[in-house]
Every structure is written in structure tokens, then in C-alpha cells.
Length: 351
Image (cartoon, rainbow, N blue to C red; front, side):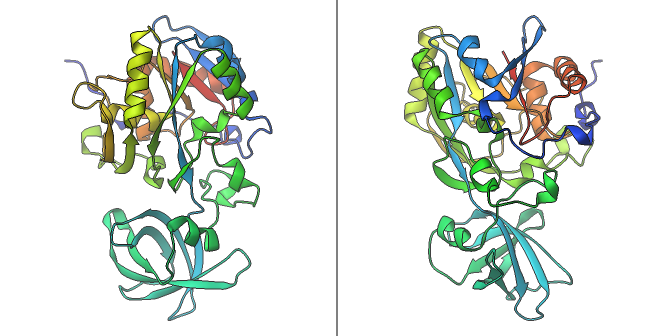
């Protein structure tokens, strides 16, 4: 009997020195491993070479979510103790769902005073309840949009593997894609970080289409799988949208023989959610789609993606798309050639 893969099949040894701590000054100069799914060939190129590697009529699908300054600092109003938080999403009733860390146990009804980058008090959050996955629900005591409020008090939510999460002011524009339009992500859709206005202009001149989806990235996307059996993993939920114009662009590309290239796993997850009924259709709402062995891809032909953390749902997605053995070989090649890994690192194109 063929053994079904478990979480241990999606791990690898990642040398710490290969985890990129800074982005390149020229985003499109990042190295790009080009991997052929049909023939297993592996080549070493750069992101700027997409102009030559893609064909007129191909279609890039990018995620236009905008990262908000989601990392929060403050003090507990009752005790004066230090408090740290991470905004995850806003709910329909105005509450925020967030992760929180402080010494001692917090109580529902307790208030936290949020401070800005200079340490000045700005406004309070009242803890209104508990959310799923160990999160808190909190109500800001200031009116305004999420982007306005987080703009007063938030810091760039760098992953902990980049300088211990210690963001600098210049990380705010660097941890944002050129497509960023709709605020809502607690983490960047990192494959999109490689694109520049000049590269986009060259791609359009080449006859390559560009269309957009939106998926607001949650921090759970980076968490390791804690169970052995993939079927037992509680997949996180993220909000996404595939608009009618994107559905039309995909249909047009397919009609003229072009390929659909998803820029990042978030674009894959959105497209495959929207194609869940069998054909791609407009979609707007939450998705808890866990792409794992057995999934049939209906909307994606190629995938441009960064290198991911071991034993994560992102590794499972990529391995399901390209094949576990081929992904293992590609990652081993990237490590041997000293590629830069994770959010600020290099990327791989599975064609």
C-alpha cells in the first residue's frame, strides 16, 4: 500500500546563515531557481530574466494586499506591565483579533495603553473576549480605519527570523510589494517583493498580462505543522477575493494558449479557492483551503514563490504542486548554491 505523506516529509535542514536579513537594493536582481516540473531540469537565473522566460500571452496573477504596521507595543493600564501584540484582523463589529504577550494573566475587560514609536501614549485597547487559537479580541477606544489607527501605533511585522523581528523605519517600504493596494495583511506576500516598476513595464511590453487577486496574509501561515498526520492539522482561515476581471483575464489567457503564473502561494490559494466548484468563478470571502496531496489544481499552471520554512503548510502546497521529490531536489540545489531563503530571500519558478 502506498504510504500517505505526513508532516515529517516536508522538513529539511535550513542553515541559519542562509536566512536573508536584508532585501536586495534591486529587487529584480534576486536569484531565481527555474525548475521544470515535466522534465526535472533546474537552471539558475534572476527575477529580471522573467522577461525572457515567459511568453507573450502568459498571465501573471499577483496578490495586491497591503501590509499594515501590525506589531503593537504598550503597557497594561492596571499594572503598568509591558505588553506586546500583533494585529491579525478586524471583525465586523469593530473588534480586533490579535496575539498578545505579557507577564501574568490578563482578564477580559482589562485595558492596554498603546504607545507610538517614540513611546508616547496614543489610545487604549479593551480586551473584550478570547478568539480561536489563543488569540484575543480587543476594542480600540479611538475611531478610525484600521490603517489609520495602526499607522499611529504600529510597527512593521517582520517575521522573527529577520533580525529577531526588530524592524527599522526603512523596512516599512521594503516589506511592501509594488502591487500593494488593499490594507489588511499582517505579513507580506513575499514572492511579490521581487517586482519593480521597470520589470513590470518590460513584462507588459513583452505581451505578458498582469492581473490581481487579494488575500490578506495572517501570521498563522508561517507556523510549523504541529501534528504528524496532515489531515489533523487545523488549517487557518484568511480572507481573499478573486474579482470578475481576474476570472476573465484567466479565461482569455487560456483561450490564446497562455499559461497562468501565480506569484506566490497566496495567489495559488485564492485562485484554487475560487475554482473550488470546478471552474474559476468570482469569489470573495474566507478560505480555509489546505492544499495537500490529493488536490487537483484547476487554475494555476506555474508558480513563482520564495523558499519556505520547513514543516509548514506552504511547503506542503509547493510540494503538492511540483512533486515532493522534485521540491526536495530543488531545495538541496538552492542550499548548495547558497541561495538566500525566506521573506527577504531569493525565489524559485516552478514551470
